[in-house]
Amino acid sequence: MERLGKQFYEQPTLELAEQLLGKIFVHILPGNIRLTGRIVETEAYLSHEDEASHAWRGKTTRNQIMFRKPGTIYIYFTYGCHYMLNIVSEPEHSAGAVLVRAMEPLEGLLFMQKQRGTSVMTNLMSGPGKLARALAIDGNCNGKDLFGEEFFLENAPPLPGEMIGTSTRVGISKSRELPWRKFIRNNSHVSKGKVT
Image 1 (tube, rainbow, N blue to C red):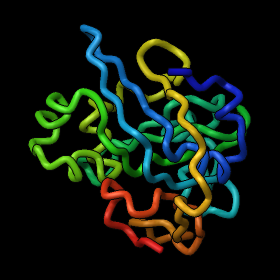
Image 2 (image 1 turned 180 degrees about the vertical axis):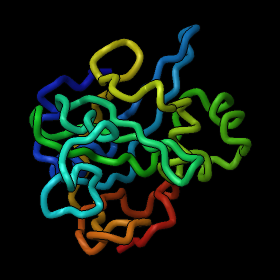
Image 3 (image 1 turned 90 degrees about the vertical axis):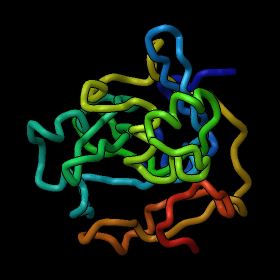
């Protein structure tokens, strides 16, 4: 299957959040263990007009990965227990990222079930912390990119507009009214956030 190149990630953040839906995220582990998931839910974050963004107040040690080239992976740790997978989206030295909120598991299911401690398919990756654990993503992945042999995205046909839902963002207190969450309608792997 065709891998997505650098040009794909150079779209404006709000467009990328939608265009990522349906694409296949791939993590190759040592021993050529292939873990893949179909992206079914995303959330956009920008440095301007967005108080929920880590880059709202400028560049820091924590968020400096967000200022790198599009297609860089930005991982952060939250609530003392969850890693979150983000894809950097704005031109270098600007800041923006798309949080991958949910995926539909495709390959490496036994590994994912062991990682997550559950065999319920719709619970494996139906949230940002869940999918990071299922994919064995942690802080060591921060700053890597989607152009090598460890991480990449495989292309898939664009989704028709009627399959794509939009809502305000989930699980945050600031700038939560922004309609920057995108998801595949009627997909059972989408997180339990607001669905419209």
